Image (cartoon, rainbow, N blue to C red; front, side):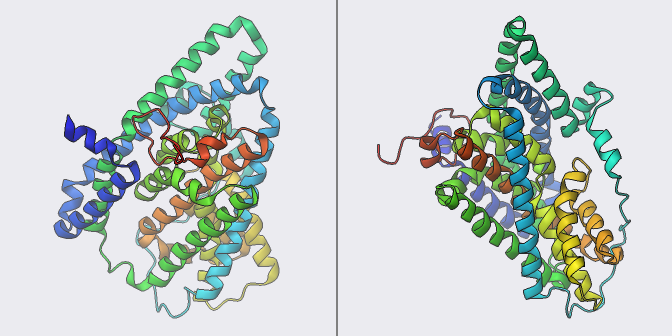
Length: 427
């Protein structure tokens, strides 16, 4: 029991970081065998996260919509949230274009081969995307984890509880208890994050190899640089503009960022991000239950903004094409609007880039060159996505008086079993 207690006394982010390092060493030592022996640990962890995500969002959104009726207008909160989603996406496009223009990742890379499994993606039209938000069978949407449909149905149920008033008081109380129960289950699952990190990183390092990265090393480094610049300077600047310490934010958001990097899935990271935003950063739980799942579906600064913008310049540079000012504007507009329009479509980065390249009149075949290294790119793209999905609720909560500054200013990096906040640094 002493060993168990010592383990939980180690800060969560340190446990995850240690597992990351050990996983990388194990993958390097075992080579391709790491994929066979250790990948199941990562797969189990991702399956557990996906298991809790849908019921967590379903009960949390119903509870949030019904609970927020007396606090803030859902329409006002939703409008502010969407506005910040769009603004930060536009800034991300600018960072992607600027970084690629400086580093020129498409110049001098030789003759690349299109990935053998590359097939142009069929992008649904805007009308079909809107229709797909409404579930024909809400139980099927819950079973299949179609998050936008789950949010839509849960929102309707929440509004119905508000409309019925005191007649549904007991049901609202039951939904709140179900939401609390799912949060507790989430804490249990999150304690397995170090184990899942170990398996995922070991399998990646052991089976991927470096030979696939070398021809496109400049592109990989450019993407990582652009995402880092966006997270540190754009997000950090917005926090400073709101009178918030960026270091506190990154400390509290660290668990969600770590899980995003190793899992490469905004959906799988969503329970951790939600827990980080409420438990570590002090965002009102009812508002966060609406904003974070929505962001996990449509807020994609890495996949939907930086990556399509960079890929557009990469392909233009590779084929020796020059982009006009109207084309650059189209890239900006398509990236911002497209990230909302392709919400819930599998393979968001590829779909978004297809939308942007088509809008800008650039050859789609160039996208096939990057698929061979997509897993490495997706780690940093997803980290950026999830960081933005945590940032916007913090900004809106600060503007609307829904942020507990005491919790924010003593931001914890632990999202595990302990419910209580850590002591104040001045205590």
